Length: 488
Image 1: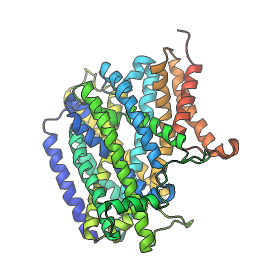
Image 2 (image 1 turned 45 degrees about the horizontal axis):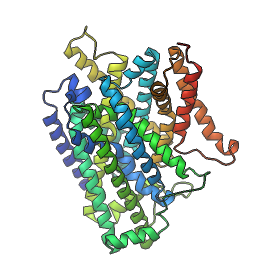
Image 3 (image 1 turned 90 degrees about the horizontal axis):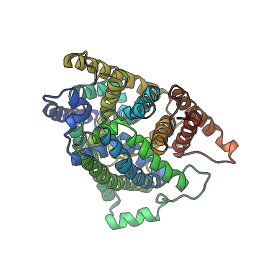
Image 4 (image 1 turned 180 degrees about the vertical axis):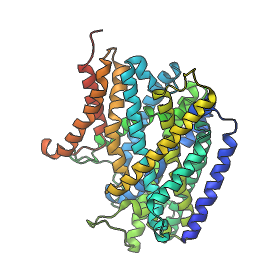
């Protein structure tokens, strides 16, 4: 596929996106930006959240990871089901009962101001790193397959994408994102469905034979029973459960869309319907991955290797879609890829801006400033976070040596763990804590977990931590809060 055709796809899609943005952001104010005036349709939120949850990580990394990890990722997705039920029936009722705009203001009511700021800080840290990982994988694919050939530096490519995201989110915020995520989810799902069809056509097989080929291949193992492996079923299942709770239920970006629904019932319908659709969509991505490797093996297609002779799994899907399945496949891949790129950062920028403005600047309840002054401050914060995101992506480009999905969940275990511990302690105990010591507990817990992860093979007879590190981190935070509890 020529670079010019790829650029045309990017431009046409961006124009369409800005058309939706213009239509939905008319008359938007600060309330529209933060919570969409609490008038979002639950079914639009549910559908759009699929694209926001999947992003470029699922689109690129999940199919590529099948060659090394088989269908082990499905163990994580099964854990998601239980985690989303906790969100629907424990966390959402809490957020609606307290009428929260920022979900971290719960920590202020429960423990105090230091806990409140700590929770908001760990969200900013988590979401900045997570959004950088998600956007990096998409931009890096475009860089490798398109912009390197045109002589465009990686920094310039990232800057262009972030500038576009800034332009369509700075005014409408959540009110706009609910609709743009719906558009992006549609194109992303269309792209993966068509990719499966194109590969099946190349293999000259139908749905039934595709099922049998995958089942008989080396890629279809789901349950792993070796307790030392990162893919051990209990690790992945319960890790997935708490990843869903932490990365969705305790994440302002994801919850900001849910609490923009009119009622608690609408928000719960959103989460439940989204849960089961997400399961089906992830199975589709795993099927795509298995078919990709079956096609590669039968066609003897050489793949990109790193310096250690290991397949660069994040380049598997792009290599096949752009170079081996025809122009139509390449066009839809690029459209799907762009659709994955924008949700990687638009919601993150909006949520980061909201948390900083509300939780650190107190902008929402500030009666000393006019609406115009508040809007000016919000715009400044929004642009500042875009610059930070750009910097993190460039740094990650310099140090990345693993599939992005592994990096994403590894860092999630470190940064979301304190949030998990704080909310668990707040919801399931009646104890108060020494509020000023909470930041210390939340900093020490990830440090201990990083050391445990580095030396686990030596300390625990070959045991390797996987996604369950999030649970361990939350448990250490809970224990630390218990140790600084007060007698009251």
